[in-house]
Length: 94
Length: 137
Image (cartoon, rainbow over all chains, first blue to last red):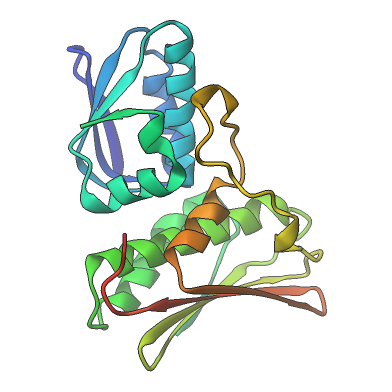
């Protein structure tokens, strides 16, 4: 089960598994972001290339506008997936 | 053990449950579990996306072979696929040059120990081998 919450304080919280069946749900929220935001991964157990693709599209759009995403609290598995994908150079990861 | 799944992304929940059921009986770590779940999703979704000319279900088979977990996905009544034709993803490119596509296969190749493709009689079998010792993911 995947959930994405926009608390309105520029922090987006992900939870569960962001797999290929959940990208529409993620995109619905992320497409609304207009400003730099923090995405909290502390409750996210899993992400696949589909989820990475949604994040990439969001980051491209924000970077074009001089803004960007900061990703926090990635677990060790997700952090390694980001490294393998080369996304540790594309996102600010804390 | 093996099971067939409908070729749609909504089948992923059931697939993960099937995979977790097998992995839970093995003496392995969360990194291996993550790697296998990721491999099965990426390969399954590729079959759904790129073999659209068939309505057959996709077979997922899991076995243990000594110190390895062997995962197979079988797609029926499909055209041949040459994995060597898939362009390598340049992961060091800046964001402006990153394009979607190919990342799933790149991740799979990076996290498993061996991946092979066999095609015969309109049937594609992808076999992934993952050592059960501590994973790098």
